[in-house]
Length: 247
Image (cartoon, rainbow, N blue to C red; front, side, top):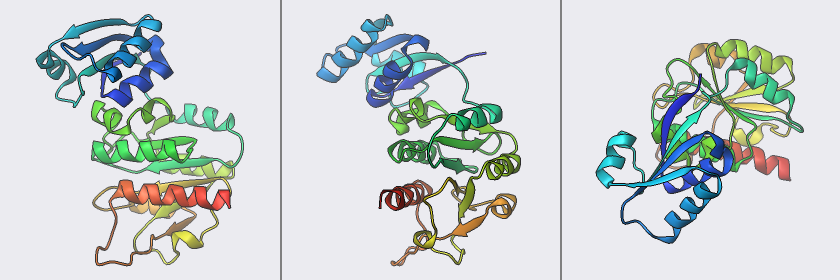
């Protein structure tokens, strides 16, 4: 069964119309908005046969549930994010050294959206999040991700440890970020097929998640702050993978 959700924000709506206009039911534009960015989005919608209507800012706020929409809101009837079976079907179709990002228990939608945006920029093949103790793909996540939710395959799984075992069985090495780890990120060979695992904002990796990893790494810190925000640490980790692979 398809979910109905509302996607707000210039980048997110534009990406949605480009990637999945067929499941976009309607586009709502704030009355009086005629700037070039709005016109470009309206043009995309019209070419795809998506109905467009003007509504008041108050209506946009009400329909979007308080999501920051920048004067544009799309009603989207899309499939729920993928599941465990879909994850491995997708990975079987990927070529080259696979890169998977696992986000274990993020609670802040801004952090999750920022991580997915970094995943898109780094060419991640799949993002995996647990069904429980995770914020899920909310309208705020879509907004912060600036369209990356529409371009990066995201999969929600019920048993992360089972997924780890399957990833290892297909030759993917799993590395988790942990402040107390002895190995630095920059000392690990990240050129092969790997999964990068990030823990929650407060407590980091759960014990079972930590134990399931092939190795742990830390990001060396040189200032007085002891740790990075999880979305920043995710970006640093993913682009170290890119750096090593592009050497």
